[in-house]
Image (cartoon, rainbow, N blue to C red; front, side, top):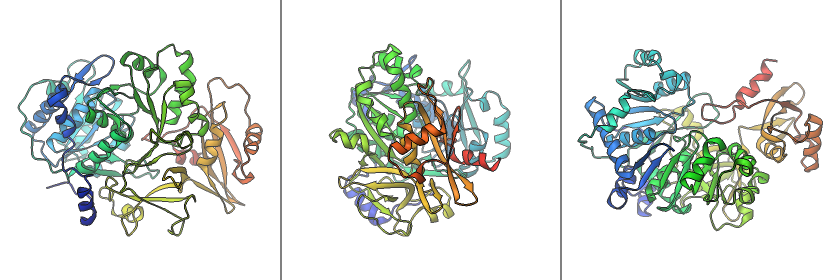
Amino acid sequence: MSIEYTPWPTDLAQRYREKGYWQDKPLTCLLEEQLATNSNGIALADGKRSVSYQQLSQYSSNLAASLAQKGLKQHDTALIQLPNCIEFYISYFALLKLGIAPVCALFNHQKTELQSYCEILQPTLIIASSMHELFNDDQFTHKLFNRFNCLSTVIVDHHKGNSELKQAYLLDQQFNAPALNPSDVAFFQLSGGSTGTPKLIPRTHNDYLYSVVASAEICQLDGETRYLCALPAPHNFPLSSPGALGVFHVGGSVVLAADPSPTSCFSLIEHYQITHTALVPPALQLWLSHAAQAGYDLTSLKLIQVGGAKLSISVAEQVEPILGCQLQQVFGMAEGLVNYTRHDDDIWSVINTQGKPISPDDEIKIVDEQGNDVPSGTVGRLLTRGPYTFRGYYKSPLHNADAFDDEGFYSSGDLVKQLPSGHLVVEGRDKDQINRGGEKIAAEEVENLLLGHDDIAHVAIVSMPDSTLGEKSCAFIVLQENPTTKLSALVLRKYLRQLGIADFKVPDKFQFVAALPLTAVGKVNKKALRATFEQQ
């Protein structure tokens, strides 16, 4: 029995096929199509090892055969938790080939997250790494077996000594691949939303393949592309926008970094002559501040994508002068819709907007609090549907009732405005507003202004309760390593007022901290910051 999900309406599915968005091919074609002409090309490298397309295909088939021998079968589900390593892609493609739909947990996820995913997905298989503290012995594994009757197999990749995972994929075996239905769920993405309950996003072969192929074309990838995967590999951004899968589609090479720090990445850029990479704004700021004195040759870089959070204009303006490459802003979501600035956009659009949607059939509605369309150029709540935007979270009927309107448009929670050119400008989150005595403050707007200060590395603005106004705002500030000035609340209030913003937008309180707490998917945990006021 196929894995359940909310399908696209018949008329839209027919339109997407007629227009060639859905090719009715499985995601495994990304590897298979390279074997005829590029089998010896390097698909993956990590500074110590490299794997050709032929090897990646063979290793993933070997692992799939081994799993089949253990009784795992098509339409089962699985959980993968591996760091940025070659084994992640081997495992991912092995499961795709066998028709098992995995959810790919991030490596910083802990017991609570993993158990929550297991509760929802009821996996038969877990593939994990002993580099993670939960899997460096058998205690957590035994707890999982005792708690989840569905679970039949746990394979741990031991980074030292004997590894069952490596044994399985290195042993050449005959794999009898099942017929895959491209309309089936290929795997699950994790929602990056702010709610405490985890939500799984079913992605079909058809919708995800379209996103990958179209993204690779927009980003002008080709066989000479050398892509540095510095963000966590399972993230939608470095997986498909265009990410590693887009690179495999064109026959380029993916180089894996342990993390996005300059220490991990700059030597790999020089050694492999990296042409493309993707970063989040805090990582980009580190690159900009370390590039000059790092002593590495970064001139091979052609394009740096930045997404995951809005990039401040002041930081965006530094990319080409300091790193000598083109900036591409990316605004996307694991639920579907992805926007890119284009190579032929004017410089203003590249610096000031978060791009245009991939597809002509990405439908965009921007609405007010009552659900009415707002005029062009006006900030409102983003709703979208299209050929690669999902139609419902997995087994979440109550949440789906809130997340979708009657026409199947998904409400992303983002506040945006759309320019006449079609470019979107992200202004914040509708759940990230502060209502200060009736005056609405978009936290992200003020955050971006503060990030323009040379001595501020990171900032998060949250609401704090107030008996008179209902809510006031507090800015949590992380300073740069070596600030040039002594910052205080007085100095920053003056700085913001000099920028010309309304007084009610200036934070009522400033709190200087060493670091901001993060959620399991690597976003700033504003819920935790707000909780500090409840404890006071």
